[in-house]
Image (cartoon, rainbow, N blue to C red; front, side):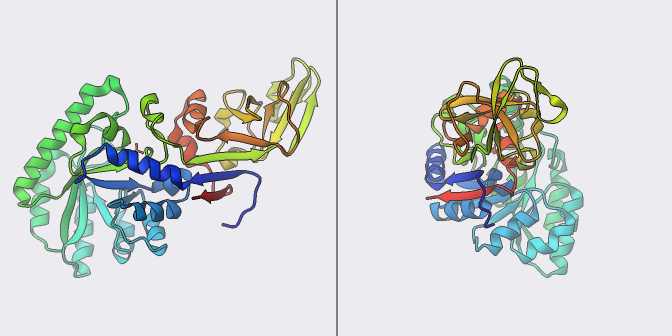
Length: 368
Ligand SMILES: *Cc1c(COP(=O)(O)O)cnc(C)c1O
């Protein structure tokens, strides 16, 4: 979108290359690399990111929904794409765009086989997801005999992979639980392979799984947040480089006298003379209201300026009482130094949410 705006999300593809190489260095050379580019590549720009990762040699892409995969195909992406959360109403589209579904229940498995047979497909690549403890999507390991019976009766589909998802791979206090998930996945894939007679790709690890559980790499890993520069751990955060910086500029400066209020619902009342700057970014842009009332902050000329009062739809106001600055000066909401993880944590949320919330209204600028 051609959308000149003072507020810009700048995406650094050199940082993406760095993160890809770092994550690759953590896995064996024969372990496949699936890049997760759902939710506009974690709020950045899915097409640009996927094209760059395709040139770097990503083996697979993953998206959440069919339409995200369609957009990648229309942009010319040739690499296999797994759709993590397909729905039967999208099955024809998946097939038309050579997108590979995650089949996670008997309903979707039977529906997909019916559509595949109806279209005379042969060995269409599908992926089976098993629930090993997240209790979100996936078959129960006890479903294996019945799944095999259905698959064995048709030549329309081929099992490209078996996979599962870890619930707490970033949480060292949940190590016992995670090791149990890994053991469950090992056992169920062993059982399934002995029925199938061939070995599909096996994958269970997200970014934190890659970094914390080498025993769970299997034959492919799936990484999202790590590619975008976050390791869910101070140790790994120092090795990765956030690819996105969100910057803006000061629209106007006001001086409040003691007792004057600021913004909607008069949520901030000045206790002393207070200088404020109005910035063109608000909750419609992904700066959620939880960042209001000094839970969030921005940086202006290297100094921290807390958000005062409520976040508006299109604007925030920040405290610049002790900052030398003027209208038009640059404002940093997050970048590679003041990271989205630290900004989010301060407000009780996570980098994933802050990054994926940055709305399409904000201009994306790519630097190579
Ligand atoms: C989003 C997602 C991932 C990526 O997780 P990160 O923590 O961002 O690496 C991997 N697998 C599944 C099933 C997902 O939904």
